[in-house]
Length: 319
Length: 319
Image 1: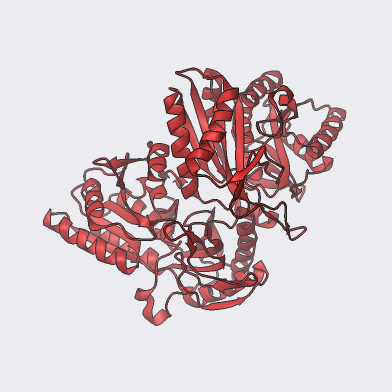
Image 2: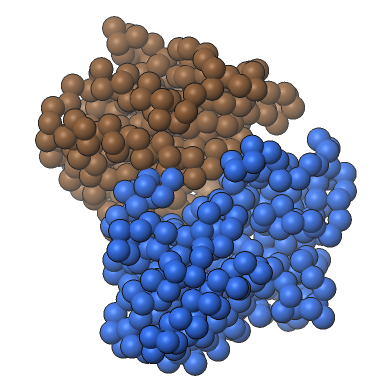
Protein backbone atom coordinates (compact mmCIF):
# COMPACT_ATOMS: atom_id res chain seq x y z
CA UNK A 1 0.00 0.00 0.00
CA UNK A 2 2.72 2.46 0.95
CA UNK A 3 4.46 1.87 -2.38
CA UNK A 4 1.19 2.87 -4.04
CA UNK A 5 0.75 5.89 -1.79
CA UNK A 6 4.22 7.32 -2.35
CA UNK A 7 3.89 6.74 -6.09
CA UNK A 8 0.40 8.26 -6.26
CA UNK A 9 1.09 11.31 -4.13
CA UNK A 10 4.67 12.09 -5.10
CA UNK A 11 3.57 15.67 -5.75
CA UNK A 12 2.76 16.06 -2.05
CA UNK A 13 4.89 13.69 -0.01
CA UNK A 14 8.29 12.06 -0.19
CA UNK A 15 9.92 9.33 1.88
CA UNK A 16 12.56 10.48 4.35
CA UNK A 17 15.86 8.68 3.79
CA UNK A 18 14.14 6.21 1.50
CA UNK A 19 11.68 4.94 4.11
CA UNK A 20 7.98 5.15 3.38
CA UNK A 21 7.32 4.91 7.15
CA UNK A 22 8.23 8.57 7.53
CA UNK A 23 6.94 10.92 4.87
CA UNK A 24 7.65 14.63 4.58
CA UNK A 25 5.64 17.24 2.71
CA UNK A 26 7.33 18.45 -0.44
CA UNK A 27 6.10 21.95 0.19
CA UNK A 28 5.66 21.98 3.95
CA UNK A 29 8.62 22.53 6.28
CA UNK A 30 10.45 25.84 6.08
CA UNK A 31 12.83 27.85 8.18
CA UNK A 32 11.18 29.94 10.87
CA UNK A 33 7.94 27.94 10.89
CA UNK A 34 6.79 25.57 13.64
CA UNK A 35 6.74 22.06 12.18
CA UNK A 36 3.64 19.88 12.47
CA UNK A 37 4.07 16.12 12.77
CA UNK A 38 1.08 13.76 12.77
CA UNK A 39 0.86 10.02 12.55
CA UNK A 40 -0.55 6.75 13.75
CA UNK A 41 -1.46 3.32 12.49
CA UNK A 42 -2.56 2.57 8.95
CA UNK A 43 -6.00 1.23 8.07
CA UNK A 44 -7.55 4.71 8.46
CA UNK A 45 -6.75 6.02 4.97
CA UNK A 46 -6.74 8.81 3.94
CA UNK A 47 -5.71 9.35 7.59
CA UNK A 48 -3.03 10.30 8.22
CA UNK A 49 -0.88 10.51 5.11
CA UNK A 50 -3.54 12.24 3.04
CA UNK A 51 -3.25 15.37 5.16
CA UNK A 52 0.39 16.21 4.58
CA UNK A 53 1.28 19.28 2.56
CA UNK A 54 1.42 23.06 2.51
CA UNK A 55 -0.79 24.57 5.20
CA UNK A 56 -1.37 21.27 6.97
CA UNK A 57 1.00 18.64 8.39
CA UNK A 58 4.70 18.79 7.50
CA UNK A 59 5.39 15.12 8.08
CA UNK A 60 3.61 11.90 8.96
CA UNK A 61 4.86 8.80 10.77
CA UNK A 62 3.25 5.62 9.51
CA UNK A 63 2.61 2.52 11.64
CA UNK A 64 1.37 -0.94 10.79
CA UNK A 65 -2.36 -1.56 10.55
CA UNK A 66 -4.03 -0.20 13.68
CA UNK A 67 -0.71 0.14 15.50
CA UNK A 68 1.53 3.03 16.36
CA UNK A 69 4.66 3.90 14.41
CA UNK A 70 7.82 3.24 16.47
CA UNK A 71 9.90 6.17 17.77
CA UNK A 72 12.51 6.17 14.98
CA UNK A 73 10.28 7.18 12.07
CA UNK A 74 8.60 9.74 14.35
CA UNK A 75 12.01 11.20 15.13
CA UNK A 76 12.89 11.30 11.44
CA UNK A 77 9.65 13.18 10.79
CA UNK A 78 10.45 15.59 13.60
CA UNK A 79 13.87 16.41 12.19
CA UNK A 80 12.48 16.80 8.68
CA UNK A 81 9.66 19.06 9.90
CA UNK A 82 11.86 21.23 12.09
CA UNK A 83 12.45 24.78 10.90
CA UNK A 84 14.15 25.93 14.08
CA UNK A 85 11.01 27.12 15.87
CA UNK A 86 10.02 23.82 17.44
CA UNK A 87 7.72 21.01 16.39
CA UNK A 88 4.13 20.28 17.34
CA UNK A 89 2.96 16.67 17.62
CA UNK A 90 -0.76 16.08 17.13
CA UNK A 91 -2.06 12.52 17.31
CA UNK A 92 -4.82 10.41 18.77
CA UNK A 93 -4.82 9.48 22.44
CA UNK A 94 -3.91 5.78 22.35
CA UNK A 95 -1.42 4.14 24.71
CA UNK A 96 0.93 2.88 22.00
CA UNK A 97 1.02 6.19 20.17
CA UNK A 98 1.58 8.12 23.40
CA UNK A 99 4.50 5.88 24.37
CA UNK A 100 6.23 6.08 21.00
CA UNK A 101 5.63 9.75 20.29
CA UNK A 102 6.87 10.63 23.80
CA UNK A 103 10.03 8.64 23.26
CA UNK A 104 10.54 10.42 19.95
CA UNK A 105 9.97 13.78 21.66
CA UNK A 106 12.70 13.00 24.18
CA UNK A 107 15.07 11.96 21.41
CA UNK A 108 14.27 15.20 19.56
CA UNK A 109 15.00 17.25 22.68
CA UNK A 110 18.43 15.60 22.71
CA UNK A 111 18.91 17.04 19.24
CA UNK A 112 17.77 20.47 20.44
CA UNK A 113 14.36 20.38 18.82
CA UNK A 114 11.66 21.54 21.20
CA UNK A 115 8.51 19.47 20.94
CA UNK A 116 5.01 20.20 22.25
CA UNK A 117 2.16 17.71 22.05
CA UNK A 118 -1.60 17.92 21.67
CA UNK A 119 -3.44 14.63 22.00
CA UNK A 120 -6.75 14.45 20.17
CA UNK A 121 -9.57 13.31 22.42
CA UNK A 122 -12.70 14.04 20.40
CA UNK A 123 -14.51 10.70 20.83
CA UNK A 124 -17.16 11.66 23.38
CA UNK A 125 -18.39 8.08 23.64
CA UNK A 126 -15.05 6.70 24.78
CA UNK A 127 -15.08 8.05 28.33
CA UNK A 128 -17.35 10.24 30.49
CA UNK A 129 -16.92 14.00 30.49
CA UNK A 130 -15.16 13.91 33.88
CA UNK A 131 -12.41 11.97 32.09
CA UNK A 132 -12.15 14.26 29.04
CA UNK A 133 -8.40 13.66 28.83
CA UNK A 134 -8.84 9.90 28.79
CA UNK A 135 -10.90 9.96 25.63
CA UNK A 136 -9.72 8.58 22.30
CA UNK A 137 -8.98 10.60 19.20
CA UNK A 138 -11.09 9.71 16.17
CA UNK A 139 -12.27 11.38 12.94
CA UNK A 140 -12.54 14.83 14.52
CA UNK A 141 -8.76 14.89 14.63
CA UNK A 142 -8.97 16.10 11.01
CA UNK A 143 -10.35 19.38 12.33
CA UNK A 144 -7.58 19.55 14.93
CA UNK A 145 -4.90 18.88 12.29
CA UNK A 146 -6.41 21.53 10.04
CA UNK A 147 -6.31 24.20 12.75
CA UNK A 148 -2.80 23.22 13.82
CA UNK A 149 -1.53 23.25 10.25
CA UNK A 150 -2.97 26.70 9.61
CA UNK A 151 -1.50 28.09 12.84
CA UNK A 152 1.95 26.73 11.94
CA UNK A 153 1.68 27.98 8.35
CA UNK A 154 0.81 31.48 9.58
CA UNK A 155 4.01 31.65 11.57
CA UNK A 156 2.59 31.53 15.09
CA UNK A 157 4.99 30.57 17.87
CA UNK A 158 5.14 27.02 19.19
CA UNK A 159 3.25 28.03 22.34
CA UNK A 160 0.56 29.78 20.29
CA UNK A 161 0.25 26.83 17.90
CA UNK A 162 -0.13 24.49 20.84
CA UNK A 163 -2.72 26.69 22.53
CA UNK A 164 -5.01 27.08 19.53
CA UNK A 165 -4.68 23.39 18.64
CA UNK A 166 -5.65 22.47 22.20
CA UNK A 167 -8.64 24.78 21.94
CA UNK A 168 -9.66 23.14 18.65
CA UNK A 169 -9.48 19.72 20.26
CA UNK A 170 -11.51 20.88 23.27
CA UNK A 171 -14.19 22.17 20.92
CA UNK A 172 -14.36 19.08 18.70
CA UNK A 173 -16.96 16.39 19.43
CA UNK A 174 -17.29 13.10 17.59
CA UNK A 175 -19.48 10.07 17.93
CA UNK A 176 -19.66 7.07 15.62
CA UNK A 177 -21.96 4.18 14.85
CA UNK A 178 -20.98 0.79 13.49
CA UNK A 179 -23.17 -1.67 11.59
CA UNK A 180 -20.59 -4.27 10.61
CA UNK A 181 -17.01 -4.94 11.76
CA UNK A 182 -13.90 -4.62 9.66
CA UNK A 183 -11.67 -7.51 8.61
CA UNK A 184 -8.13 -7.33 9.89
CA UNK A 185 -5.62 -8.39 7.21
CA UNK A 186 -3.11 -9.49 9.86
CA UNK A 187 -5.53 -11.98 11.47
CA UNK A 188 -7.98 -12.55 8.59
CA UNK A 189 -10.71 -12.15 11.21
CA UNK A 190 -13.34 -9.57 12.06
CA UNK A 191 -12.29 -7.24 14.85
CA UNK A 192 -15.65 -7.72 16.60
CA UNK A 193 -18.99 -9.40 15.94
CA UNK A 194 -22.32 -7.70 15.62
CA UNK A 195 -25.75 -9.10 14.75
CA UNK A 196 -27.23 -8.59 11.30
CA UNK A 197 -29.92 -6.23 12.63
CA UNK A 198 -27.84 -4.59 15.35
CA UNK A 199 -25.88 -1.39 15.49
CA UNK A 200 -23.39 -0.15 18.02
CA UNK A 201 -23.43 3.51 18.94
CA UNK A 202 -20.20 5.10 20.07
CA UNK A 203 -17.92 2.62 18.33
CA UNK A 204 -14.23 3.48 18.08
CA UNK A 205 -12.19 3.40 14.88
CA UNK A 206 -10.41 0.17 15.80
CA UNK A 207 -13.54 -1.64 16.89
CA UNK A 208 -13.45 -0.37 20.49
CA UNK A 209 -16.76 -0.93 22.28
CA UNK A 210 -19.32 1.82 22.05
CA UNK A 211 -21.80 3.00 24.64
CA UNK A 212 -24.79 0.95 23.60
CA UNK A 213 -25.69 -1.86 21.26
CA UNK A 214 -29.18 -1.50 19.89
CA UNK A 215 -31.51 -2.77 17.19
CA UNK A 216 -31.25 -1.15 13.77
CA UNK A 217 -33.08 2.18 13.61
CA UNK A 218 -33.73 4.83 10.96
CA UNK A 219 -30.88 7.15 9.99
CA UNK A 220 -32.60 10.18 11.52
CA UNK A 221 -32.92 8.43 14.85
CA UNK A 222 -29.26 7.41 14.84
CA UNK A 223 -28.31 10.99 14.02
CA UNK A 224 -30.53 12.31 16.80
CA UNK A 225 -28.89 10.02 19.33
CA UNK A 226 -25.48 11.29 18.30
CA UNK A 227 -26.47 14.95 18.06
CA UNK A 228 -28.23 14.89 21.43
CA UNK A 229 -25.02 13.68 23.00
CA UNK A 230 -22.93 16.26 21.18
CA UNK A 231 -25.30 19.09 22.10
CA UNK A 232 -25.10 18.04 25.76
CA UNK A 233 -21.37 18.74 25.69
CA UNK A 234 -20.78 21.63 23.34
CA UNK A 235 -22.66 24.44 25.11
CA UNK A 236 -23.68 26.17 21.92
CA UNK A 237 -25.96 29.19 21.89
CA UNK A 238 -28.11 30.53 19.04
CA UNK A 239 -25.99 32.31 16.46
CA UNK A 240 -22.98 30.03 16.98
CA UNK A 241 -21.16 28.53 14.02
CA UNK A 242 -19.78 25.03 13.49
CA UNK A 243 -17.94 22.88 10.99
CA UNK A 244 -19.44 19.45 10.35
CA UNK A 245 -17.65 16.27 9.34
CA UNK A 246 -19.73 13.25 8.34
CA UNK A 247 -17.20 10.49 7.92
CA UNK A 248 -17.51 6.97 6.52
CA UNK A 249 -15.74 4.22 8.43
CA UNK A 250 -14.93 2.61 5.10
CA UNK A 251 -17.76 0.63 3.58
CA UNK A 252 -20.63 3.04 4.17
CA UNK A 253 -21.28 4.87 0.92
CA UNK A 254 -21.59 8.59 0.37
CA UNK A 255 -25.33 8.28 -0.22
CA UNK A 256 -25.87 7.29 3.40
CA UNK A 257 -23.59 10.04 4.66
CA UNK A 258 -25.75 12.62 2.92
CA UNK A 259 -28.80 11.16 4.65
CA UNK A 260 -27.07 11.62 8.01
CA UNK A 261 -25.94 15.12 7.06
CA UNK A 262 -29.47 16.14 6.16
CA UNK A 263 -30.56 15.45 9.72
CA UNK A 264 -27.45 17.04 11.25
CA UNK A 265 -28.26 20.21 9.34
CA UNK A 266 -31.88 20.12 10.53
CA UNK A 267 -30.84 19.69 14.13
CA UNK A 268 -28.32 22.53 13.98
CA UNK A 269 -30.72 24.80 12.17
CA UNK A 270 -33.38 24.20 14.84
CA UNK A 271 -30.94 25.60 17.39
CA UNK A 272 -30.01 28.51 15.13
CA UNK A 273 -26.47 27.22 14.74
CA UNK A 274 -25.01 27.79 11.28
CA UNK A 275 -22.77 25.43 9.35
CA UNK A 276 -19.73 27.27 8.10
CA UNK A 277 -18.09 24.27 6.47
CA UNK A 278 -19.09 20.68 5.83
CA UNK A 279 -16.87 17.79 4.89
CA UNK A 280 -18.68 14.62 3.87
CA UNK A 281 -16.90 11.47 2.76
CA UNK A 282 -14.08 9.09 3.66
CA UNK A 283 -11.81 11.10 5.96
CA UNK A 284 -10.81 8.69 8.73
CA UNK A 285 -11.76 5.11 8.07
CA UNK A 286 -11.45 1.81 9.86
CA UNK A 287 -10.49 -0.51 7.00
CA UNK A 288 -13.79 -1.77 5.54
CA UNK A 289 -15.95 -1.24 8.61
CA UNK A 290 -19.58 -0.36 7.91
CA UNK A 291 -20.55 2.72 9.84
CA UNK A 292 -20.05 6.43 10.09
CA UNK A 293 -19.21 9.17 12.53
CA UNK A 294 -20.36 12.71 12.99
CA UNK A 295 -17.92 15.36 14.20
CA UNK A 296 -18.72 18.93 15.13
CA UNK A 297 -16.11 21.65 15.55
CA UNK A 298 -17.59 24.48 17.58
CA UNK A 299 -16.06 27.53 15.96
CA UNK A 300 -15.05 30.90 17.31
CA UNK A 301 -13.52 33.70 15.24
CA UNK A 302 -9.96 32.44 15.57
CA UNK A 303 -10.84 28.83 14.71
CA UNK A 304 -13.00 29.95 11.81
CA UNK A 305 -10.16 31.94 10.31
CA UNK A 306 -7.73 29.05 10.65
CA UNK A 307 -10.24 26.55 9.26
CA UNK A 308 -10.48 28.61 6.07
CA UNK A 309 -6.73 29.16 5.78
CA UNK A 310 -5.55 27.59 2.50
CA UNK A 311 -4.04 24.12 2.48
CA UNK A 312 -3.05 21.77 -0.30
CA UNK A 313 -2.74 18.05 0.47
CA UNK A 314 -3.70 14.88 -1.37
CA UNK A 315 -7.08 14.64 0.38
CA UNK A 316 -7.88 18.07 1.74
CA UNK A 317 -7.67 21.28 -0.19
CA UNK A 318 -8.87 24.67 0.93
CA UNK A 319 -8.35 27.56 -1.49
CA UNK B 1 -30.14 12.00 0.23
CA UNK B 2 -30.78 14.79 -2.25
CA UNK B 3 -31.84 17.11 0.58
CA UNK B 4 -28.46 16.41 2.15
CA UNK B 5 -26.62 16.92 -1.14
CA UNK B 6 -28.21 20.25 -1.96
CA UNK B 7 -27.62 21.46 1.60
CA UNK B 8 -24.02 20.25 1.68
CA UNK B 9 -23.00 21.53 -1.72
CA UNK B 10 -25.00 24.76 -1.92
CA UNK B 11 -21.76 26.54 -2.83
CA UNK B 12 -21.59 24.52 -6.06
CA UNK B 13 -25.08 23.48 -7.10
CA UNK B 14 -28.62 24.74 -6.82
CA UNK B 15 -31.97 23.14 -7.61
CA UNK B 16 -33.66 24.36 -10.78
CA UNK B 17 -37.18 25.65 -10.07
CA UNK B 18 -37.03 24.10 -6.61
CA UNK B 19 -36.49 20.53 -7.80
CA UNK B 20 -33.46 18.64 -6.58
CA UNK B 21 -33.82 16.31 -9.59
CA UNK B 22 -32.25 18.94 -11.81
CA UNK B 23 -29.28 20.82 -10.39
CA UNK B 24 -27.39 23.65 -12.01
CA UNK B 25 -23.87 24.84 -11.26
CA UNK B 26 -23.77 28.14 -9.41
CA UNK B 27 -20.75 29.20 -11.37
CA UNK B 28 -21.12 27.17 -14.53
CA UNK B 29 -23.38 28.30 -17.34
CA UNK B 30 -22.61 31.56 -19.07
CA UNK B 31 -23.50 33.34 -22.27
CA UNK B 32 -21.42 32.31 -25.26
CA UNK B 33 -20.30 29.00 -23.75
CA UNK B 34 -21.47 25.56 -24.80
CA UNK B 35 -23.40 24.05 -21.88
CA UNK B 36 -22.52 20.62 -20.54
CA UNK B 37 -25.30 18.44 -19.12
CA UNK B 38 -24.56 15.11 -17.46
CA UNK B 39 -26.74 12.78 -15.45
CA UNK B 40 -27.98 9.33 -14.69
CA UNK B 41 -29.25 7.24 -11.82
CA UNK B 42 -28.25 7.74 -8.21
CA UNK B 43 -26.36 5.15 -6.18
CA UNK B 44 -23.09 6.10 -7.88
CA UNK B 45 -22.21 9.05 -5.65
CA UNK B 46 -20.22 11.23 -6.03
CA UNK B 47 -21.33 10.52 -9.62
CA UNK B 48 -22.85 12.50 -11.13
CA UNK B 49 -23.74 15.46 -8.94
CA UNK B 50 -20.25 15.79 -7.47
CA UNK B 51 -18.87 16.89 -10.84
CA UNK B 52 -20.96 19.99 -11.40
CA UNK B 53 -19.30 23.40 -11.25
CA UNK B 54 -16.99 25.81 -13.03
CA UNK B 55 -14.87 24.04 -15.64
CA UNK B 56 -16.87 20.85 -15.51
CA UNK B 57 -20.58 20.09 -15.94
CA UNK B 58 -23.08 22.95 -15.93
CA UNK B 59 -26.05 20.88 -14.84
CA UNK B 60 -26.93 17.37 -13.75
CA UNK B 61 -30.19 15.43 -14.10
CA UNK B 62 -30.76 13.05 -11.21
CA UNK B 63 -32.66 9.75 -11.47
CA UNK B 64 -33.79 7.23 -8.89
CA UNK B 65 -31.35 4.58 -7.71
CA UNK B 66 -29.80 2.88 -10.74
CA UNK B 67 -32.41 4.36 -13.08
CA UNK B 68 -32.40 7.15 -15.59
CA UNK B 69 -33.83 10.60 -14.89
CA UNK B 70 -36.98 11.24 -16.95
CA UNK B 71 -36.93 13.75 -19.84
CA UNK B 72 -38.36 16.72 -17.92
CA UNK B 73 -35.49 17.28 -15.46
CA UNK B 74 -33.05 16.70 -18.33
CA UNK B 75 -34.82 19.41 -20.32
CA UNK B 76 -34.71 21.77 -17.33
CA UNK B 77 -30.96 21.15 -17.05
CA UNK B 78 -30.56 21.81 -20.76
CA UNK B 79 -32.33 25.15 -20.56
CA UNK B 80 -30.37 26.14 -17.45
CA UNK B 81 -27.06 25.15 -19.04
CA UNK B 82 -27.73 26.85 -22.35
CA UNK B 83 -25.69 29.96 -23.10
CA UNK B 84 -26.83 30.28 -26.71
CA UNK B 85 -24.06 28.15 -28.24
CA UNK B 86 -25.71 24.76 -27.87
CA UNK B 87 -25.59 22.08 -25.21
CA UNK B 88 -23.56 18.88 -25.03
CA UNK B 89 -25.02 15.80 -23.36
CA UNK B 90 -22.52 13.30 -21.96
CA UNK B 91 -23.85 10.21 -20.20
CA UNK B 92 -23.42 6.47 -19.96
CA UNK B 93 -24.69 4.19 -22.69
CA UNK B 94 -27.72 2.54 -21.04
CA UNK B 95 -31.06 2.02 -22.77
CA UNK B 96 -33.10 4.03 -20.25
CA UNK B 97 -30.74 6.97 -20.27
CA UNK B 98 -30.52 6.98 -24.07
CA UNK B 99 -34.32 7.02 -24.38
CA UNK B 100 -34.84 9.83 -21.89
CA UNK B 101 -31.92 12.03 -22.90
CA UNK B 102 -32.94 11.69 -26.56
CA UNK B 103 -36.49 12.76 -25.75
CA UNK B 104 -35.10 15.73 -23.83
CA UNK B 105 -32.85 16.60 -26.77
CA UNK B 106 -35.86 16.68 -29.07
CA UNK B 107 -37.78 18.86 -26.64
CA UNK B 108 -34.77 21.19 -26.42
CA UNK B 109 -34.62 21.46 -30.23
CA UNK B 110 -38.23 22.63 -30.10
CA UNK B 111 -37.02 25.44 -27.86
CA UNK B 112 -34.21 26.23 -30.31
CA UNK B 113 -31.41 24.77 -28.24
CA UNK B 114 -29.09 22.64 -30.35
CA UNK B 115 -28.02 19.48 -28.56
CA UNK B 116 -25.19 17.09 -29.38
CA UNK B 117 -24.59 13.85 -27.52
CA UNK B 118 -21.57 11.75 -26.59
CA UNK B 119 -22.37 8.41 -24.99
CA UNK B 120 -19.66 7.06 -22.71
CA UNK B 121 -18.69 3.48 -23.60
CA UNK B 122 -15.52 2.90 -21.62
CA UNK B 123 -16.37 -0.50 -20.07
CA UNK B 124 -14.25 -2.79 -22.24
CA UNK B 125 -15.65 -5.90 -20.54
CA UNK B 126 -19.23 -5.14 -21.50
CA UNK B 127 -19.03 -5.99 -25.19
CA UNK B 128 -16.35 -7.13 -27.66
CA UNK B 129 -14.27 -4.55 -29.52
CA UNK B 130 -16.29 -5.08 -32.71
CA UNK B 131 -19.24 -3.67 -30.79
CA UNK B 132 -17.41 -0.69 -29.26
CA UNK B 133 -20.56 1.45 -29.49
CA UNK B 134 -22.60 -1.11 -27.62
CA UNK B 135 -20.43 -0.91 -24.54
CA UNK B 136 -21.56 0.55 -21.23
CA UNK B 137 -20.27 3.73 -19.65
CA UNK B 138 -18.69 3.26 -16.23
CA UNK B 139 -16.14 5.05 -14.01
CA UNK B 140 -14.03 6.22 -16.94
CA UNK B 141 -16.82 8.62 -17.75
CA UNK B 142 -15.24 10.94 -15.16
CA UNK B 143 -12.37 11.44 -17.60
CA UNK B 144 -14.80 12.10 -20.42
CA UNK B 145 -16.75 14.63 -18.33
CA UNK B 146 -13.50 16.35 -17.36
CA UNK B 147 -12.39 16.76 -20.97
CA UNK B 148 -15.85 17.91 -22.08
CA UNK B 149 -16.10 20.42 -19.24
CA UNK B 150 -12.71 21.90 -20.04
CA UNK B 151 -13.53 22.17 -23.75
CA UNK B 152 -16.80 23.96 -22.98
CA UNK B 153 -15.12 26.25 -20.42
CA UNK B 154 -12.48 27.25 -22.97
CA UNK B 155 -15.14 28.46 -25.35
CA UNK B 156 -14.80 25.83 -28.06
CA UNK B 157 -17.74 25.46 -30.46
CA UNK B 158 -20.37 22.77 -29.98
CA UNK B 159 -18.88 20.71 -32.82
CA UNK B 160 -15.39 21.03 -31.36
CA UNK B 161 -16.57 20.13 -27.87
CA UNK B 162 -18.35 17.10 -29.23
CA UNK B 163 -15.32 15.99 -31.25
CA UNK B 164 -12.80 16.17 -28.42
CA UNK B 165 -15.22 14.54 -25.98
CA UNK B 166 -15.76 11.70 -28.43
CA UNK B 167 -12.01 11.33 -28.74
CA UNK B 168 -11.66 11.20 -24.94
CA UNK B 169 -14.28 8.47 -24.77
CA UNK B 170 -12.59 6.48 -27.53
CA UNK B 171 -9.32 6.66 -25.61
CA UNK B 172 -10.75 5.71 -22.22
CA UNK B 173 -10.65 2.06 -21.11
CA UNK B 174 -12.17 0.71 -17.90
CA UNK B 175 -12.51 -2.69 -16.35
CA UNK B 176 -13.87 -3.56 -12.93
CA UNK B 177 -13.83 -6.43 -10.49
CA UNK B 178 -16.47 -7.24 -7.89
CA UNK B 179 -16.04 -9.25 -4.68
CA UNK B 180 -19.44 -8.72 -3.10
CA UNK B 181 -22.75 -7.39 -4.44
CA UNK B 182 -24.49 -4.22 -3.36
CA UNK B 183 -27.81 -4.07 -1.50
CA UNK B 184 -30.59 -2.32 -3.36
CA UNK B 185 -32.62 -0.10 -1.02
CA UNK B 186 -35.69 -0.43 -3.24
CA UNK B 187 -35.80 -4.24 -3.01
CA UNK B 188 -33.78 -4.81 0.19
CA UNK B 189 -31.96 -7.50 -1.76
CA UNK B 190 -28.52 -8.01 -3.22
CA UNK B 191 -28.33 -7.25 -6.92
CA UNK B 192 -26.44 -10.50 -7.56
CA UNK B 193 -24.88 -13.33 -5.57
CA UNK B 194 -21.26 -14.27 -5.49
CA UNK B 195 -19.42 -16.90 -3.45
CA UNK B 196 -17.34 -15.91 -0.43
CA UNK B 197 -14.10 -16.80 -2.20
CA UNK B 198 -15.10 -15.76 -5.70
CA UNK B 199 -14.56 -12.62 -7.68
CA UNK B 200 -16.10 -11.47 -10.90
CA UNK B 201 -13.92 -9.69 -13.42
CA UNK B 202 -15.54 -7.20 -15.75
CA UNK B 203 -18.49 -6.43 -13.49
CA UNK B 204 -20.66 -3.43 -14.36
CA UNK B 205 -21.62 -0.68 -11.96
CA UNK B 206 -25.18 -1.94 -11.55
CA UNK B 207 -24.20 -5.57 -11.07
CA UNK B 208 -24.14 -6.41 -14.79
CA UNK B 209 -22.36 -9.71 -15.46
CA UNK B 210 -18.64 -9.56 -16.06
CA UNK B 211 -16.53 -11.64 -18.41
CA UNK B 212 -15.38 -14.32 -16.01
CA UNK B 213 -16.07 -15.50 -12.48
CA UNK B 214 -12.97 -16.87 -10.83
CA UNK B 215 -11.56 -17.85 -7.45
CA UNK B 216 -10.07 -15.10 -5.32
CA UNK B 217 -6.56 -14.17 -6.40
CA UNK B 218 -3.89 -11.70 -5.24
CA UNK B 219 -4.37 -8.01 -6.02
CA UNK B 220 -1.44 -7.97 -8.44
CA UNK B 221 -2.92 -10.82 -10.43
CA UNK B 222 -6.31 -9.10 -10.62
CA UNK B 223 -4.59 -5.93 -11.78
CA UNK B 224 -2.62 -7.83 -14.39
CA UNK B 225 -5.78 -9.38 -15.80
CA UNK B 226 -7.32 -5.94 -16.14
CA UNK B 227 -4.21 -4.23 -17.47
CA UNK B 228 -3.56 -6.97 -20.04
CA UNK B 229 -7.02 -6.42 -21.41
CA UNK B 230 -6.60 -2.64 -21.44
CA UNK B 231 -3.19 -2.86 -23.13
CA UNK B 232 -4.69 -5.09 -25.82
CA UNK B 233 -7.03 -2.26 -26.78
CA UNK B 234 -5.19 0.99 -26.22
CA UNK B 235 -2.33 0.68 -28.73
CA UNK B 236 0.14 2.58 -26.60
CA UNK B 237 3.78 3.01 -27.57
CA UNK B 238 6.77 3.77 -25.33
CA UNK B 239 6.78 7.43 -24.33
CA UNK B 240 2.99 7.71 -24.27
CA UNK B 241 1.22 9.35 -21.35
CA UNK B 242 -1.93 8.35 -19.51
CA UNK B 243 -4.20 9.38 -16.69
CA UNK B 244 -5.15 6.62 -14.24
CA UNK B 245 -8.33 6.29 -12.20
CA UNK B 246 -8.50 3.60 -9.53
CA UNK B 247 -12.08 3.72 -8.33
CA UNK B 248 -13.82 2.04 -5.42
CA UNK B 249 -17.26 0.58 -6.12
CA UNK B 250 -18.25 1.69 -2.62
CA UNK B 251 -17.12 -0.63 0.14
CA UNK B 252 -13.56 -1.26 -0.97
CA UNK B 253 -11.30 0.99 1.09
CA UNK B 254 -8.59 3.32 -0.11
CA UNK B 255 -5.89 1.01 1.24
CA UNK B 256 -6.79 -1.65 -1.31
CA UNK B 257 -6.99 0.90 -4.12
CA UNK B 258 -3.38 1.92 -3.44
CA UNK B 259 -2.37 -1.74 -3.68
CA UNK B 260 -4.00 -1.93 -7.12
CA UNK B 261 -2.44 1.39 -8.15
CA UNK B 262 1.03 0.17 -7.20
CA UNK B 263 0.72 -2.62 -9.75
CA UNK B 264 -0.87 -0.39 -12.39
CA UNK B 265 2.13 1.94 -12.08
CA UNK B 266 4.55 -0.98 -12.39
CA UNK B 267 2.83 -2.28 -15.51
CA UNK B 268 2.76 1.13 -17.17
CA UNK B 269 6.36 1.85 -16.23
CA UNK B 270 7.47 -1.47 -17.76
CA UNK B 271 6.05 -0.26 -21.08
CA UNK B 272 7.63 3.17 -20.66
CA UNK B 273 4.24 4.82 -20.37
CA UNK B 274 4.16 7.72 -17.94
CA UNK B 275 1.33 8.62 -15.58
CA UNK B 276 0.46 12.27 -15.93
CA UNK B 277 -2.36 12.26 -13.40
CA UNK B 278 -3.78 9.72 -10.98
CA UNK B 279 -7.11 9.81 -9.22
CA UNK B 280 -7.59 7.21 -6.51
CA UNK B 281 -10.72 6.94 -4.41
CA UNK B 282 -14.50 6.86 -4.58
CA UNK B 283 -15.36 8.44 -7.93
CA UNK B 284 -18.16 6.31 -9.38
CA UNK B 285 -19.60 3.83 -6.94
CA UNK B 286 -22.26 1.17 -7.00
CA UNK B 287 -23.93 1.71 -3.61
CA UNK B 288 -21.99 -0.48 -1.16
CA UNK B 289 -20.62 -2.97 -3.66
CA UNK B 290 -17.20 -4.43 -2.79
CA UNK B 291 -14.87 -4.06 -5.73
CA UNK B 292 -12.95 -1.59 -7.78
CA UNK B 293 -12.29 -0.53 -11.32
CA UNK B 294 -9.25 0.69 -13.18
CA UNK B 295 -9.61 3.28 -15.92
CA UNK B 296 -6.92 4.52 -18.25
CA UNK B 297 -7.22 7.65 -20.37
CA UNK B 298 -4.70 7.46 -23.18
CA UNK B 299 -3.60 11.08 -23.50
CA UNK B 300 -2.45 13.14 -26.44
CA UNK B 301 -1.42 16.80 -26.26
CA UNK B 302 -4.94 18.14 -26.62
CA UNK B 303 -6.42 15.79 -24.01
CA UNK B 304 -3.56 16.45 -21.62
CA UNK B 305 -4.13 20.18 -21.79
CA UNK B 306 -7.85 19.81 -21.18
CA UNK B 307 -7.31 17.34 -18.34
CA UNK B 308 -5.22 19.94 -16.50
CA UNK B 309 -7.62 22.80 -17.21
CA UNK B 310 -8.90 24.13 -13.85
CA UNK B 311 -12.22 23.00 -12.49
CA UNK B 312 -13.95 23.49 -9.17
CA UNK B 313 -16.68 21.07 -8.15
CA UNK B 314 -17.64 19.36 -4.89
CA UNK B 315 -15.60 16.25 -5.67
CA UNK B 316 -13.06 17.19 -8.30
CA UNK B 317 -10.82 20.19 -8.17
CA UNK B 318 -7.98 20.98 -10.52
CA UNK B 319 -6.09 24.21 -9.88
